[in-house]
Image (tube, rainbow, N blue to C red):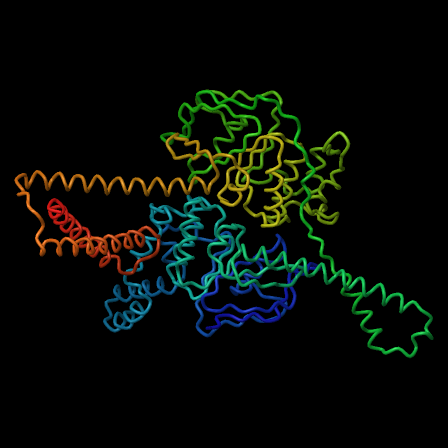
Length: 626
């Protein structure tokens, strides 16, 4: 086992807030490590320290000599004035630098410089770097390579960073929330790429399917310490539950022993004067151990009930919307039912957010109208985030909405009490909004939505910046939510947990209503693709048989000779082998992997296709004699 990185006694704090203390662990070749922790406990900070972007308070990070590290932060910084292709080639990566040096040598005309630049191009595989980069950008749906970075969305910029970082083939890849702002199909492409590639990975993500599929080790940051689990996310959940149960049992044992020792310590001094000093020291140690707080600090939203909602929710009547030539909806009609829980998926830019904004009257349709029930009370969690004054304090932002938050006929809270349910301590409530972290902003946004007791929740990408623990609580709440729900999300686990059916926005105003959750939809797509492939094979075989029949109308009826029977059997084996090889090549071409020998593989694919056509035709000829 080759050690890539050793972290020893790492400590980091901000002011009086300790993120982690004396953390020690190693990263070995082939490790695919996912880091899990609540927001604000140091996940991203740990990645920045390991990547060399930030310094620890104490401790060391010791990489293997010559280790090449690729780091993609949550929000990659790319020069907005550059084109897509120039941004990738000027990213400072070794292959890009080698290409630049070689081009400068060519421009100089100096034969010595050219000769010196060529070995570096060879060693880094830079000769076809541009072609491989273009191929990967297209796989990530970046097709306009001359587009200026400043015109691109956050998700597109993330994909550019992913493309040029992956192509550098770093020894260690460090990813901070790689799935944020990516379409589901791009997430699945990246998931499959990382799962199949022999890459060493250190990653923070809240995407639980991603963790389960890719990672072989989980590191949890909890109470400024780390706990390592040798397995994927599902394994981590089981073992973490066991660890917490063991800690609770140990704490109960410690407290029981402490009660006995406290009674002993309270006796008259002379009664214990001759007692061993170790027992007194052990008593103080027990007191320290008994102060461990195992209570999980999580948001408390289970008791926030929705208001009453009637039987009429909304009806969409002939809704059409376009922006120039881009069609969002085209004569869309739908009647939404009471207690319906709907997920909306589709590629970025297809109109998901526009659709839910039209429903709420934020954006007007070009044609048609929404007929909303009189009892409907919308609660809108927007991916655009908080619309409050950044210079206001947290408590003031909530107080402006209501001085008293009524949850039901018997329960009400002051703004300060309500904010504590969302993990804002009295000190946190005095913070200015512009100082909040991404996770804190999300919690504040969620608090301001739920405090109004909506009966129709509309959530646009709610999983961005929320930690896994908070997501699990929100999922439980939504599963029991006594109202209607529409959610736009790229988090497949989240969708599977709460929705009854999906609207799949396919573009050009087309909406497919699928009865089931996201996993059901993916399974349906696979079965549909398999059926279509089988139909194509059947049509091809039928066409080949028809051609054979036309070309040989007078085939003499006779029995197959011994030699022909042996040939027939041999053809069956050869056709099966070629079909399997062709299938493997199809999987390679469709996997999204970067193929270094595309030309030879493509030539082989054409050769196999030609051989199959020839052998299948001969097989059909002989089968007439069988």
